[in-house]
Length: 296
Image 1: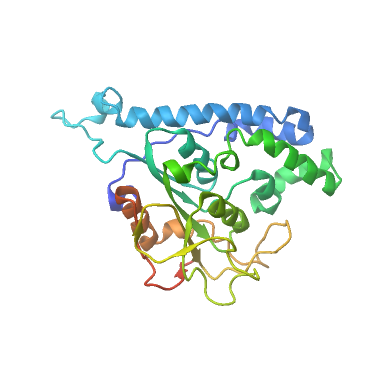
Image 2 (image 1 turned 90 degrees about the horizontal axis):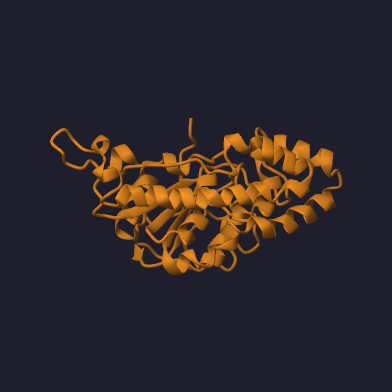
């Protein structure tokens, strides 16, 4: 995105869900009485990221710093097009809440995402090492579900699930979804699209590729291009359809993980760049379902 479309990226750790927080997360899963520490620290991220974004565009922020100026004094950051957001995976899951909280970000792309960690965790291949800790503290699988859903109400303070109805009103969002994603369950993307009121690029999938009786139930479809409103585009790498149960898909039974495939397609990056700079959702797939080459 930076090299092809001249975007300047700047990021900060998602405190509360970063590498330094792993011991806290493990402790909370072993004894859920400590769980509120996770969303409490994550709320700091919802301050850090907007202030970093403001520093990128404010005349007294990074553009005024000599480190961000050319030898002749010309600013290297072009702030004329404003501030936008591009986040994938966890950056996209938490990015929905960030978009709702920010008054500076104009629109955002959320890649390979969903919302509601209580729905996502035990459907994710990434959760396996954490699942073992949860199993040790709470061996009853039914109790695990009750506990996760109860604590989701605490997590809603800094997770998209608590803010999803707002970004559609204040910020347009483009969602890029990987069909059969091993790490972020695509069912949670459908929930987010319905809540946002996002429109679905149609046809979304080739016949027979969706496991659902009514694919993408409750999500309006839209022809492209269009401008104004949020959109969801599903990209299919040919990965086998994930299980319908709350269990993660894993290789080799469920093929190669397509989690990083959408952002690695030049056509997807072009669609993202056009949306972020103009608000237009372009047809990147010639009126057909969007397919993607598996990442080597």
